[in-house]
Image 1 (cartoon, rainbow, N blue to C red):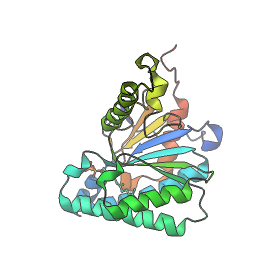
Image 2: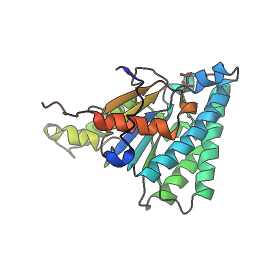
Image 3: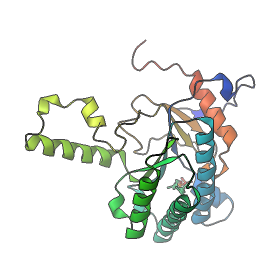
Image 4: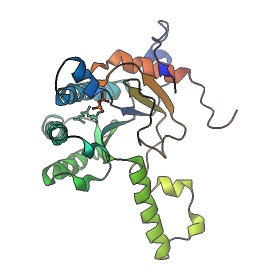
Length: 248
Ligand code: FPP
């Protein structure tokens, strides 16, 4: 995966292209952003949370149907306690704000990942946000929290195996669709485009199954610096790719 550095061609704008239906973003580079400024890593996450708010709003406004953001991985618990606590505070602030301020919003909030590891308070905020937004008709925002692609597959395999053991299903009927239907994203289209700011060429356990045919756009900008124009550049780069899904 090569780093994408090109500027969008001036003659192309969002009005000229077909938008992807589902976009994933690995919000990377908060720590480096803070380090460059001599600030604690938590300051990078605070700035990253502001970028997250801006880009969610932008994606909803331009007509993206599904947006999945990687907010906290199953591996992120290994970070120092103060950094994990700072992230939990940011999640709490956003989810509290989403409940109180976004009553007329059209965005459907959905969580992917194992929410049992979070505090009761956060767990309840997650449940309440899903409940209050579930009948809306706008963009689906998947917040990947305590998410790992491998853990998601393990959980799907366990559920399917339990059904096979109880006789509810015949193992020979297990197919790709059945696996998709046991993931946190069941019922949603697979991501078309995955954007990774900060220049790292890794998937980092993000949407492992669902990203089989996704286009990756790696960008040389740290997440807190990511702007609407960077989103446009990624969307335009995506529109120029020739997706063949294994065909010719
Ligand atoms: C990766 O950057 C980023 C994270 C582990 C956290 C992402 C979280 C946010 C952007 C805040 C989201 C807030 C809400 C409200 C959803 P890094 O810290 O690994 O950066 P580095 O690679 O430069 O160290």
